[in-house]
Image (cartoon, rainbow over all chains, first blue to last red; front, top):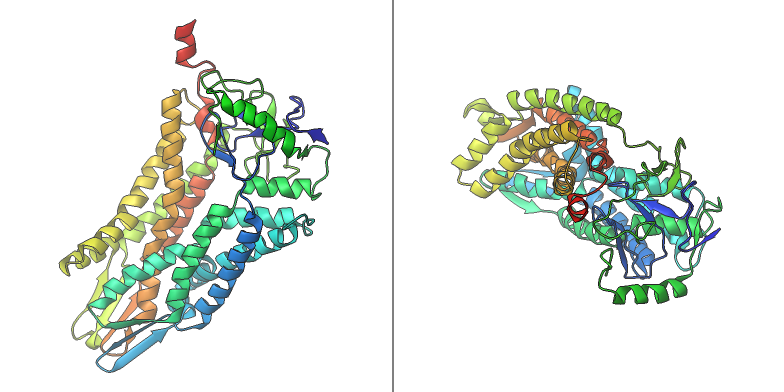
Length: 245
Length: 224
């Protein structure tokens, strides 16, 4: 184990490289509410928040419940000249189920339902045991990495905007009524956005490491009191461009 | 956090690559060069290398190839009154024109931007970034490029909106003889084109943007 502020230029221990521009930084333990940004490109390296894990777990549970509602309740219904048609979320995905459009059905289900639900479940799995001072679950590192890899591919919020565009297109043709699943999806975007605000990947990796998921002797010992004292001294100096928050 | 040697804002920045180390793009952990896998997050480690641009170009080309039929083939097939009132097949651009005919200028603008302006803009920006990656640049130019990459990464997924609209319309508008809408083959090639350009942007290594920076900034040289 190494102490905060120590680093080794030969092995890279105690250093952090900005994932965006490769600039080296000395790893320090941040206090809740502080923000570390890259000195070169300004990319936010870490922004821990107090109680973030509990909040992310709560928001992920919420989005799982909302996803169940979104899948099973009626989504949209239209009627014209006494003829009506209702569709659920599965009905929307099944729109591509004829012939060679079939693979798109699978992709649609994954983008709208599967991946958002899987990401929420993975975040619960990783963070629920780590609230307070708990130890991480088995394979929590792999689970969190998978969740980060899937981030760009979970498209629930895009689907909701797509729904509004479709509604405007249909409005002239028939009367549309919105089902509970539509509102569940709208709530899902807000919950997802809030969860993203609280998620700080660097803090989660750091916590996974400090709590013993990977003990290779390179983890920085959190000496937060000393770090805070030193930081207060530095913050008084006007030329500290890399500290904010 | 600060630079290893207490560097100020305008001093040359020491990168992991220059220090003979390799930084993990997943979690930021630094490892000795020639380490294959990050011991913390399990991501594959690779030094910033222009050779990684091959993947960017490959996905870019795949996306471009699928974008052509996406615009030529019909996206939607509409049938009204058993075909008596006419069967129409609308391409992406045709759909925008239809929306404008009905006076939905706002929605027409959204669809036009999401399915025409954004995809073409993405192709142009990724090609530009891949062309200039690793070549000499000023700090200001590097910041511009990074912002362009972030814009492409953020906005790329939103092109999928068109595919979702087609799916919702085809599932919803099934009113027997009055009107029915079916998806056209362009939906698949458009979805593939969006997915491939997303992969292209994701395989671009942003560290290459900064590799071409001079070791010292212009400000340093004038001070000497």
